Length: 76
Length: 216
Image (cartoon, rainbow over all chains, first blue to last red):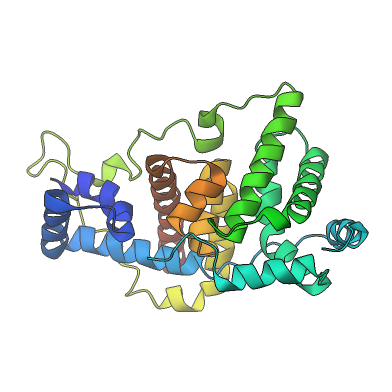
């Protein structure tokens, strides 16, 4: 397989979704190819950075409406 | 591999909710609300309607807590209720969105720029034309973290909505692939393709940003 095909498999590789001969081929390629190994590192870095994103917040109004609904429920 | 079943924390949270614990409810609302709002918005035609769908879903969650069995994680269970409410509402509006509109209509295209690879007439077809730009040697990459995060956030917001939500839930919020599949009603293949395209896009945006900063 060429690099153009390997890069389309890197997410599956990181997921542990590759098995058998395909996994062996991808691992062999990554061990031998600086370019694809870099892309794998970059994808890991992208995932790490995405993990640092802060969550959007609800508006106070949205929270208030939901809290009112919660309070209005019968207990249990 | 993380289980998709409810954890002990989930079960404890459900008990607190049933006991009327407002802090527990607000904590859950803050954690899931923005994602729920975005998912609801995929199925209905207006922001205000999406808000109503989310409210209706939370009511359904709270009224249905006694039925929660813990076979799926709490947040997966909540999202399944949400998607049911959203789809029903969407159908009532006569609105039916093709999957391609939510997922992106180019899922069968390469996720990486074909120009980065050698062509049929070149010495090694399919191999890199040159090494990708190296992020690690770039001192700007450390200093620019805040700006980079802003760029990443913007890139994700610009993705087709299903791609955006898959990458947010998986990589920003740490959900397992099974949780995301169940919550968003995706096949395993769909989820992996959406995630890959989204990550490849975000990687490209980061690369372009680092490249432009280093040339400044």
